[in-house]
Picture 1 (cartoon, rainbow, N blue to C red):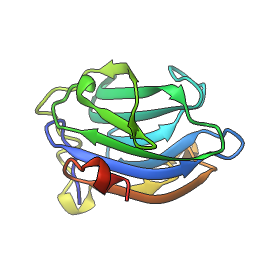
Picture 2 (cartoon, helix red, strand yellow):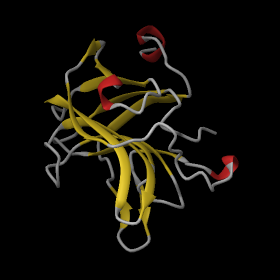
Picture 3 (cartoon, one colour):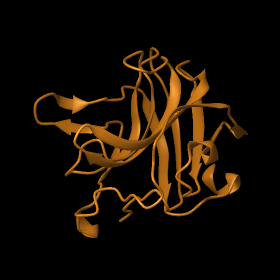
Picture 4 (cartoon, rainbow, N blue to C red):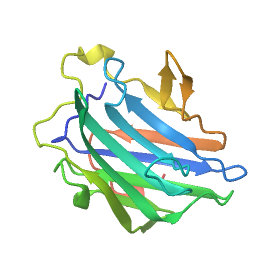
Length: 174
């Protein structure tokens, strides 16, 4: 079981195909104790600070009252074109958005940094025992007791993987 921290490297790989330009969460590994803590990768809607159709990665590590330490990067290009795409995300454990690399269909893509407020020693929900931390969810962010399913994805997914180390482009695209 992976318990994320700002100082630990990880990689994420997934194939996806949007249907009718629908947005939503491709995969997420979130905390049960702090619903905004964890990592998620998804196709953005046009809500809040998002650009419709962009591929975004959020790594949030600590909620203290109204404050949230997190990193949020998104693609400059859009991928809600109803075609199959492959993403490989590598996070080197530096707590800096500028070091996140995302490859789509084998090519490294340009990213916009939306938020970059991580601190190196922050852990996601350190009070959670390792065997209870962060269930992996495909096609959804998770459930909210008041709002039901959060950020469901209505497209197609295939071959999702999550590693607790940096993968090579070859390994991540298999």
